[in-house]
Length: 111
Image 1 (cartoon, one colour):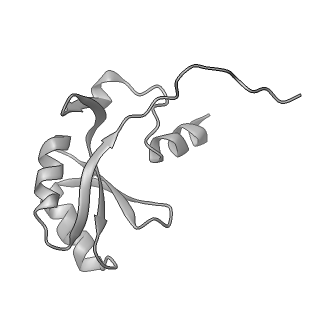
Image 2 (cartoon, rainbow, N blue to C red):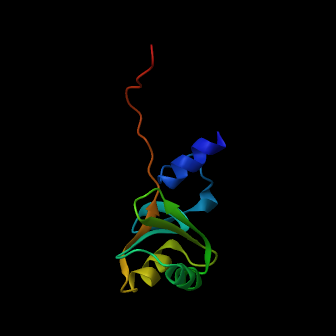
């Protein structure tokens, strides 16, 4: 179960996250202290070190081969983290890690 939860979490899908792991940005629920960031060019080790320092980074994960990084801060909330990283000229975009839930509906079952 833990493997699925990690996969869903990396994809931004809620898999039973605790309330303390969430916050609100512009009225939408997001992962607490996290942002998704993409650099304009290839990320160098020096870029990652600077990113970790500016974000008070607890963890930086690459999301597949998309070029997107998930950054988790020790101290900054999601809105502050997005604002801080968006100021960098080498960042293409930074946005909160929105929580997405699958809605109910018809469930397809294997026969």
